[in-house]
Length: 275
Length: 257
Image 1 (cartoon, one colour):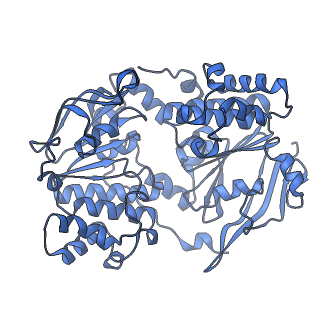
Image 2 (cartoon, each protein chain N blue to C red; image 1 turned 90 degrees about the vertical axis):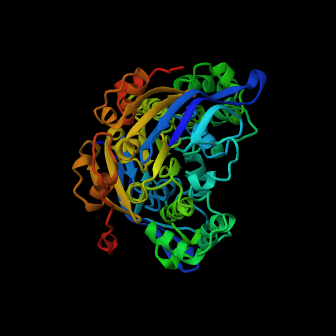
Image 3 (cartoon, each protein chain N blue to C red; image 1 turned 135 degrees about the horizontal axis):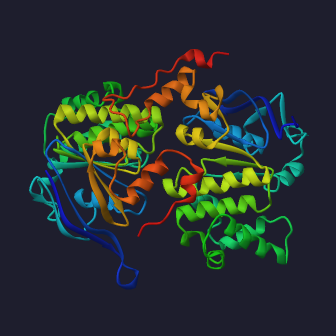
């Protein structure tokens, strides 16, 4: 087997708070090849902080530690901020949840995509147009000249994905990229990501709270709770999860075809977070 | 209990006019739970807001217990109340839980405020310790419980729910859905629930209407939904897309106008 694209070993992130340090991520380890890895968990599970740690995009007061954090053989812990800047966007990209807050409101969307292209100049506009087509925007010429407030949420999300994919990154971190979208648009956006992983051999970290979605879309899944990985499974087997936390989450979801009168609520066991 | 006939809502004027709700008809019997399901822009929340009296620009008929919602009738607050989607935005950040819950009683001139507030809190599974807290001292699920308690302060017959759990984690969603089902039985409430989540609708409702682009596509009972046997192609696509990612389904998605 070839060397993994990303290796994370014993990642720990701590935020100082007035009541003492808060350990948002406590000892997370995983490795990623050219595949779709899902990270699922509820709010506060540390899934987003884990994603951002890879890009070292954390507030300055956060403390990031790891035994190992390497991307394509490069140590991200000791990389200078200049080296990190060279990686961000061009080799590792991050797609965030809400296009309303992540696009520049006073810049045409096409120009924002062109800005992300590695080789600037005349080719950038053409490349931006290609990217708009790649994310299945029907009329790229028209959309290129729109401002973010003139596009719908689904289109805004596709524009962000186009922007993040323009420099052809090796690794895409997608943090709830489809949670704000309708199910049918969500499916289309996922199909675009699916193609890119399959055709270009990109690695994908897909962060989501939606267990069913991750189970159907990803290859492998990490289930996080309280800053820790509760279990790691093949996505196809997620329904057979053995950990009581994963089980509890799956049971608490209402299903279209069930007629349970009462949904079981999750009983959290403090032992899950023991050191 | 709820009657909606030929409801139309238009936003904007002239060429920019958007018909958000188009010729919508439905009725909900006393004690029944009815769902409105659809994607964003389908008009489901707009229809709900008409019944809550939050949307003045509509034509047609909309009545709760025979009282038209267009007349600002003073009986309405005691007949119909609403719970909103975002529990972080729907509670006043500088008002305590006590103040949020006593305000409707004071406006309506109902006495016996203290005991009623405590009873409402225990009804939604919050102890008396929560009474003098501020929203920022509560979790999302606890805030939604307060919002539900507030909606029930005037003992309404109808509860309007606009995506009441979509901002919550799934484990908290289960608690709130259980609570709503329990309250519905205990108070014989009529519920109108708006959601994009078919599973939530299937769990909570007896009947439902599927909406697209402002119009009702079809109405069905929950057994039909559970068997996944809708009449319309639009609903079939929505059901397929809700099942999770499928390459095949994604490639065949069409837009229905």
